[in-house]
Image 1 (cartoon, protein in one colour):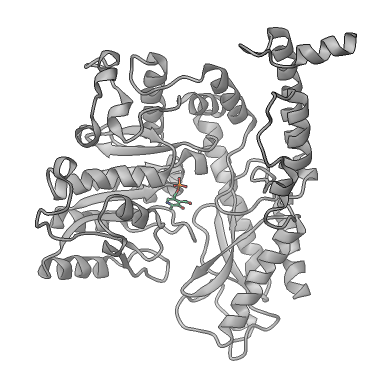
Image 2: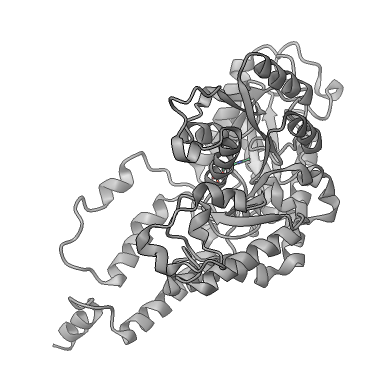
Length: 508
Ligand SMILES: Cc1ncc(COP(=O)(O)O)c(C=O)c1O
């Protein structure tokens, strides 16, 4: 009888919410679950060894007819969901860009959930709107951006660049917002970016009706930075051929190697051609907080827009990306549109963030405020410096092992290298005669085999569940890529990761 009472109490009643006492109990359980997960994360495999479809097969095909108790749901999370995940917050997760899970970040996410507000206009949640203004401005000050720039939060950098280029498109082809691009006898609008830039430039071209073939990839130099002379030539050739240059996307922290384009030179080309300069600082932008990284900020004053992803480097949990624009009213002119049913919810003099993009509903910036207050500027800077130290340490280890070659000296938290075999492929100089950093042009013989070996190393390690790495291609060569940044990854983890790589290479 008592059992049955408890069972019925633990169920959500047909109407309304969970009874407060039951909810409190569940919250305590969840708090313990989260703390245990964080504390014991190293005992998990970094990546599952399931075949595609295996997780789906363990889940019911149809949604339940009746509600189920939270305990049962949590048990399935433990038994089915957690083992089926790649654990980005695991200290041996060394893929992509090192991850942003931190205890204060988790607290920020938890705190956001019960509030569940919508920052679409000032009136729909004044504190969310004003908090967004404040945190975006904190970040602007931290990275030393002038106050001519104002920001707006989107989910991702891909969405940020699309909005920036929508404004560039409006300025290159006025009235596109109203009339669209077709039947107007407009020249083809062109966007330029380096062969190392992120594919979000093409995605924006697709979404904005510009066409992905009008995103022109300019070659990069031996340090993976855009060749500014080629850029200038390409723009001039397009102008001569009746095409209309619209924007250049410079990258500060490219996806493969974290290389940094010469932004000031690019900015001068843009000024001369009177075209938009967007800086994709999705990854690298956060490093502008370090005084010793002042050099990556050179030329930002010439930008029209800059995107930074605090969910990549600045410890804000996914998703959280900021687009800065010089004179944000330009963005508003393209996207402001107040439907009748929201007219009463807008206050003219106040910021209504729904006017600054295609989204109406918007999340609250609370999690950024919580994490940045918790770490402070000094805490963020110290953690970024540690990433850089670890990246350079790994580069040193790679340089001292003749079976490996470093692709480029790391500039931030990314390290690219490749296994070249015991003595390197035939025809190569011996390891002692080799340069510390591999030359980027020219082909070694047996490239296909060497590339395959490097892919195999990554696959083998990821399948083992002991660590997680990624691979990329540089000048057609497959290389292993490591991204640091997880606050749980220590020198000891990195050493273990390096030993695992050496073991996998030896076994091959
Ligand atoms: C340089 C760069 N820009 C843009 C992006 C896209 O970021 P998001 O996932 O926020 O769209 C990435 C993703 O890794 C990136 O490396």
